[in-house]
Image 1 (cartoon, rainbow, N blue to C red):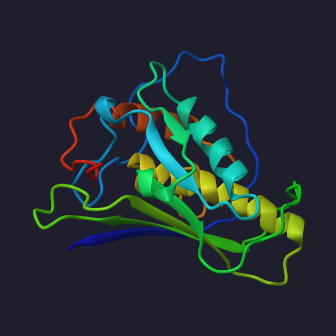
Image 2 (cartoon, rainbow, N blue to C red; image 1 turned 180 degrees about the vertical axis):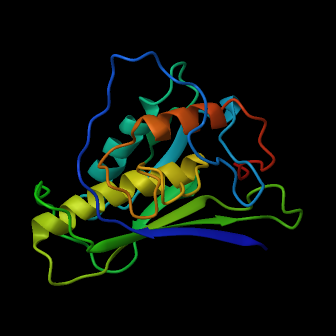
Image 3 (cartoon, one colour; image 1 turned 120 degrees about the vertical axis):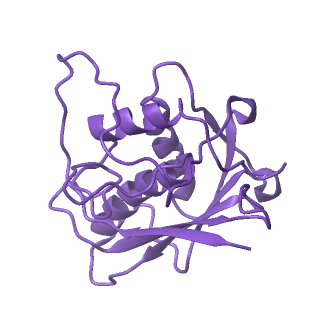
Length: 209
């Protein structure tokens, strides 16, 4: 089986965008995965996510899904949390330790956590063989609990973007999908790209149910 892993260690800060301008519907960065295109088809909505039941993961995933759903004009992506990983299309877990459930520190960001999203292909290489697996890990034990919570919250948004089919954006682009983004939520670059992606014919089929 062929596997594609997408990973990032994130340090981000808040930003806002100009909502007075008319929406731009052209992609801001590449939306393909090494030449291949994946996104969830309409017939698989809502996408079923299982979030690790320990610590604050469920809240992080719920928040991230809401943020991504709001990037679409016509409901091209919808998701729901499910209680059983055996029924999930995407499984999000902790890699090792479970961080404390505390409010995030809104001060200067600290690169204290990381994430990885793994896509496993079937023998044909044109379909996913298993649910998408995303994991979150602690990288720096010296951070405060609040700094770690802020990093985890933002990293989950980034990794959920990968589960929608987005790759990393180029380093020159300010976006949540940058390998080390400077934002806490998807911005206009992310919105434009994911919105366009969901109107392109995919070359990779979702995993079987």
